[in-house]
Length: 375
Ligand code: NDP
Ligand code: MG
Image (cartoon, rainbow, N blue to C red; front, side, top):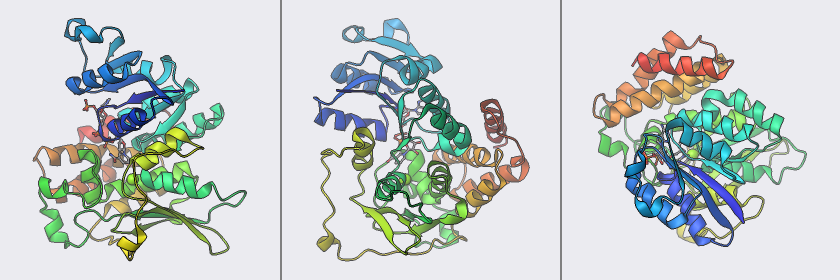
């Protein structure tokens, strides 16, 4: 039996992880569940999975807890995240909350010696050097949940002592891949939320349309696989079947293929180094017929260029990139700015704040605060 704590259990990744727990009741018990504000959904999950602890970061008063759910310990705010990450007995901590809020939880879980299953890419984007350093000191291998990084991680299992020469990071290209720049700038909320292949939370779906998600993933890959940005190539692959690949010095390329369904990478992280049944069928190559690959268009998707510049600048540039994008993404979802203004706002924040330092968590929080305040 493995005990799993899930931070962000009501989200897209969290619910799919619980789906796997439901399929394998003899292998997983859920020890903690947290959400931000969706209390009814969390109540249902607590009813079904009966964790030791549950929490709402938005807060919950004792009288608001349904009577039949008072068997578990309920916590609020940051205390809930800290307890789920580090205090409650767990073999695995899945960090599937969204945004920079995940950084502290990843650090807490590692500090407590927990096996971290990492969906929250923002933790590596903003504090990659601190996270990787702590993981190394604790002797913990971060198990990636993001599909591309899971693919790379899987390909590297066959690498033995050989170092990968290059990472080929695939991208669907999102719903605006074939649109011209002017039309993209005017795209509506509904158009941005209509992802061709993946069903995900709203924030990452908008990031996929702007390709800010791919910019964040270049940063994530840089830290997870200790690979300089100029050896991480983005390959647009509209079918989302090849989830990424690694290239070796002998000219060999290893790729991982699968249907675009997050239960595969979530399940792999949960059962690593074993594989288990996830409810997902392998892709039918005959039905697919062919797979296609293209270069990304840097003019239409400036996020890729910006992400690379941030990695080269180091310091707090990647935090500013992330936090300005989190704010702009949320403003776009609220209907306050146009799609084209997302990249403009991030660019403006970077021009003013890219020189900030990020040597410790406090400096990262400060860069985060300043980038948000500028919006
Ligand atoms: P969702 O928005 O669907 O879910 C986010 C979860 O985190 C919810 O449980 C939410 O609670 C909770 N949450 C939101 N904000 C906070 C906060 N500030 N503090 C604590 N908890 C919070 O996101 P996704 O599941 O789509 O994504 C989660 C992470 O996984 C992201 O970092 C994303 O980049 C990454 N990822 C997601 C993929 C996907 O397919 N969805 C693919 C690859 C990576 P509530 O429901 O109450 O709001
Ligand atoms: Mg991804």
